[in-house]
Image (cartoon, rainbow, N blue to C red; front, side, top):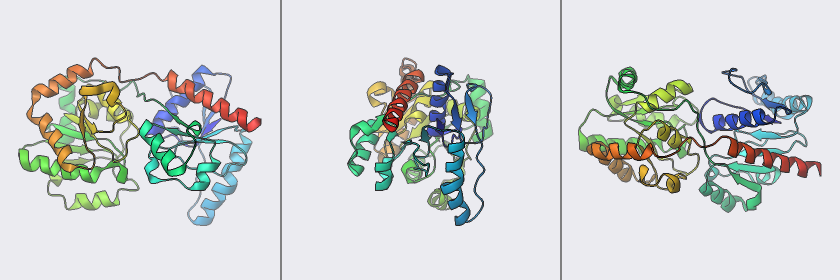
Length: 353
């Protein structure tokens, strides 16, 4: 069994951790990751990294890779099932494929909807959206519950101050860790931060991670003419340890995606004992309740109002942190890994039968 790629951030890292957990629980099986290994230590010995040779420039080279070289590689390695962390359907002969879909609101081609064996989603709302746009039967989809890396956790005051001195000259900051693209809602976040700064007239900063990637063009254009540009710190993708330190030092996480889906940023903030402003449709709402602040992701006024509410009321922030400490935000890796293993077994059984 194989997974097509495994970045060290976001939901693809979550899938990698599930893969690693399955490998530890099933040492008799071989798990391939078609990706360069940024960190080979700490993974199960039967989790094998297989760096693919990327296609050269040009459409012909990419076509050759997708249609010939990659299928040949999968056949050579005797892969019996493929998980696509990017949600793409690959030419792979008769190998059944499970597609991970973070944001079904983007839509998927009809041929993909019917060729893929199963779909992995990260919230009930995402499942409803995919079913509405494709007409797929519910049994072809599975919602995996969240979990997060155990390296996230709170920092003491001196450590937080060191992080703030590196990123914001010692000032408090709101943090957004969502990736690029319209579903991340970062332009609306900039508009909300403008309202916040205009009304509060304070030194608060906004730190946004994951810039400089495909899908950032509109965001970069907005940022170039942004009135409060000096108060916005934009970083590239950060390694997990650095991201954990940055998150634990934030005044609050602002996670208001336009489409409800992957909830790991919220879990990471809760594990770090950092207050969260999130979308009203957050999949953790039933679990976290009043420990989170909720805003309409389409309304910059609503997002700004929650930012101002948290900034002006330190007692509220303290109460939220107290409630967060009573939660179990990490989740259990073995449970979703076990469900994914069972799903893979069912898909293989159908393919062989």
